[in-house]
Length: 235
Image (cartoon, rainbow, N blue to C red; front, side, top):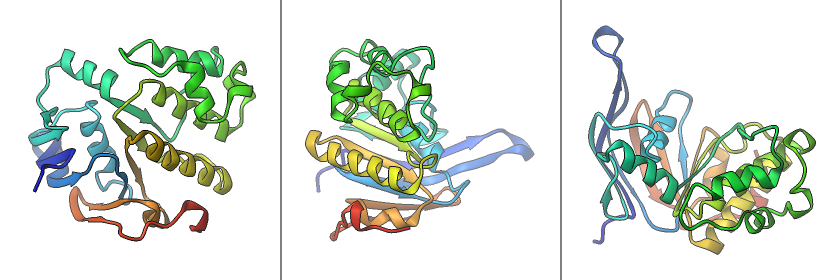
């Protein structure tokens, strides 16, 4: 069997020491294939965000190994981690983290300037359907529009891996659905591997792969043979 595009091998992450020690991840092993739209499910405190931070190079493992496209990214030096985050990974968070004094286009341009093979900012804005709002400031945009700018900012880096931490958590039902549909379509169009972490079990049917985590351990990791369009999902 060929190796997975993303491979966690017995990954452990411990915070603190002594009596204050917290085992956020405990011997986690799983794989994700290239181009998959993956939903990682778990309740608050299950270890989802820790896992995402490790995969995105924002934190380091206590033990174990993480491979991305055959490369060990869990033991990179500080400079190599910066390059990994710049070159390979895009991030979308629950809160948009846009710079309020810059327009939508300028927020995206900043990300495009940080990497070596970016998608032009205007093209990224067009991909999320906001060409007519590119000169608006965040305060002039709705929550859904701000999240779409945040997605455009991530896409401008032309990442091979897009990590999304509760991307619809601050959005209403209709807007959240629209954002999820856009992420799914973009993953298909660009063959980008997308990992979404969420506590919302209802989102599982839209994924190519469903991973469940509880108390820092993987409960299941299964490909989904019957993907359901987001338009047909209710919660």
